[in-house]
Length: 277
Ligand code: F3S
Image (tube, rainbow, N blue to C red; front, side, top):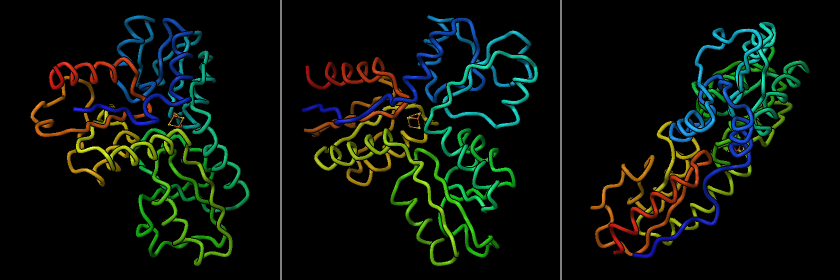
């Protein structure tokens, strides 16, 4: 069986940057999971003694708190600073951008609409910057019947599909006098999505590697699944079921933006060993 990696996959710029920041801050703690990959978080803990705290109130003055890649709510950041915690910001610059847009646009009197998942830490953070609140939607239908101002500003969760974002923008444009649409979808996601689309058109089985709660991995898996129903989302080689590979000739591999290379390599090695030897 032929095994091929997508042209773009795995760690993005923001995650590489956050990991480097964590490695440079030995014995600090991240507030919330730094990235959506528990295996990499374990490695940071083991090799760099970087801890993980889920409650920002448990940081004490003088301690170092690393802000997760997805960012945190504005109020919590302020509380950390007020408590004299040493804050090291590992928020991805592509996430800082929609935070700033929300703040600026709400100060200018726009209603803010965020296209994304309300429960995702990135969106909780982004929303908190909208000074007069924001509406979070996952599709255009959810906007039906809402009373919005004539001026609306739209931002997207960085990991969303461009096509879906366009649907929300297309819904708003004919209904409002002014619609400011900001392209806050990040290129890393886009490149990984394009590459998975391409390879899954040729592959007869697709393996997409990443944390089960990683939304960008889920997106990659959904794109792959559109092209081949034999598309599987796994966290690491232990999730492989070798019966999937029966009668398959081309295995495409992709991985989410927070999946480390060592996990990807372990998966490739495991498939090679079991199927190709
Ligand atoms: Fe940042 Fe994009 Fe990665 S938002 S964390 S570079 S997927």
